[in-house]
Length: 271
Image: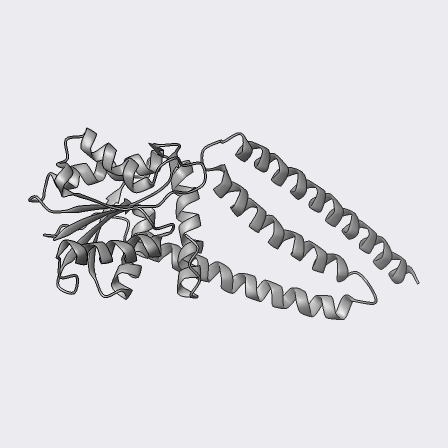
């Protein structure tokens, strides 16, 4: 009888802890959402990551609570063990993907036939901070190459008044890049399309993409996936890594890119 009473009290405490955790998670996510609405840089990435981790934690808390229930304890214990096992596999998988992302976050030296700069969002018609980093790196890289075509790739997304390709072209011209070398791919909305549509444009220019070497200019965190996509499309691609300067941005974007790579390998393309 005493044991049963103890179990009941334990179950009550766990339910209380679960409720407090759920409310705290809701409030924290709400704060992040408000900050995102206020346009704190890259807060949408934080919101997604935090929401995901809190959802995982909340599921565990629910299973932990059910373990103290006489009616559901046996099934809950089995489910909790399965959950922890799957979570452990997920952690190993995450760090494996992260290792791959980090492994290609550098510039490769090579003679190339074309440069492709991947888009990264605008504020109206002004390139975002991340996109400016890519464009600045492209300018430096072009100074090491003979006059070769550069394709700026990116369509028009929410809050943008022109295509990313148009804004990127203007940015390069303003930095004394020969306008005749710039080709605009303004229909893509994600990395897969950036590269796929750019390759089609290369063929229009007259390049033999099967024998060409393409330099993909993007931030270091994005290079592994971009090169993986290009290679799957049958193109020899090298990476040109634009910097990701702050610890805050590196943590956010390398984490996001790790999930994006995992989704890519599972056949899901969303970035």
